[in-house]
Every structure is written in C-alpha cells, then in structure tokens.
Image 1: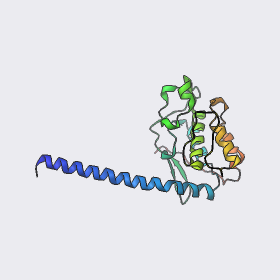
Image 2 (image 1 turned 90 degrees about the vertical axis):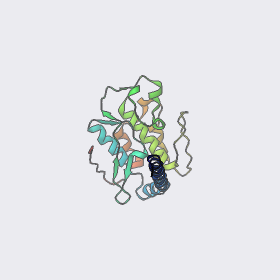
Image 3 (image 1 turned 180 degrees about the vertical axis):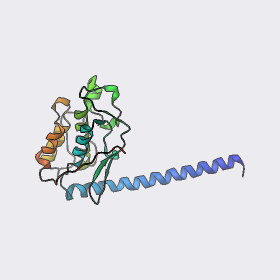
Image 4 (image 1 turned 45 degrees about the vertical axis):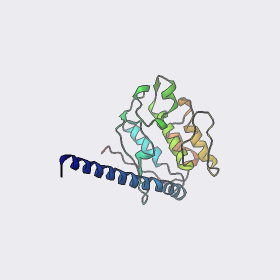
Length: 199
C-alpha cells in the first residue's frame, strides 16, 4: 500500500472515530434531561452546586467557566464535582478586568459586556442562576430584558425567586452565596458535605 493510500486510510479511520465519539456524546446528552429531572424530583432542590462554588471561593479559586458541561453528578450518590479549572483564576476581592473573563459566552454575566470591571462572586451567582434556570426549563433564558420568563409553568414560586435573584442585571443586587443556601427554596435539604481538590 502506498504512503498516500495509508494516509487516506488513517484519515478515514480518524473521521470514523470522530463520528463514533460524537454519536456517544449525543447519546449522553440525550440522557441528561432525564437525569436532571430525576435529580430534582428525588432530592428537591439540593444546593450542592452552590456549596461547591462557595468552597472554590473559600480556597482562593475563582472558576469563570461554570456551566453544565463542567459539572459531574454521580447519579447513585448525587455527589457533585466541578471540573475543568483551565479558566480558573486566583480569587481577589478587588475584582477583574472584563478581558479576564474566559468562560463560556452563553454564560457570560451582563457586567462583562457593560462595565470595565467585574467581581467573582456576583459572576458565579449569575452562572448558578443560569444553570438552575436551565435545569428546570431545559434551555437557557433570554437575559436581554430585566424580566425572566419561565417556559415551565410548574416551576415553584420559591425556585423562580432564587433564579430571579441570581439573574439580577445589576451585580450589586445579586445575593451572596450564603444567602442562596439559606433561601427558603433550599430548606429541608440534607446536610451538605463538599471536599475541595484541584486534581
């Protein structure tokens, strides 16, 4: 077999492997809503994600890329892990220049686009609000207007309240992480344990 034929064969194999990988990924993505609904109904409104973000901040890490693809949930134990800290930065209360934001564009807080500086905790609270909205509605909200509309009519008043607080356009009006955990929507959740590691 000539060198050219070998290259063509390797290229065809790489394309097949890529198609197989994309198909497996799509199969996993198709299962996500089922897992999310089960997670929400079985362990009503668990706040592990908020605690995980809180732990990052307490350990001096600001993760600018928090979104569903970077969250792993063990469906047997419901242990939650944040992954992919490649966009992480050292936490500073002084804030960051807007070009320091390296997260997913669809999860970008509005202050990144409109202000010269932004702060870690309000940015993470925005991420949490988007993720929570997406978990209960199956898609991201339209955040262009001040009013957040819910596609799912069965979302509770308490859940709507948390989401709207987290998605306040003014970063100064967003709640602190502690306030989110103490919100009545999270009342009755089991005790939260979160271990921190950057392995």
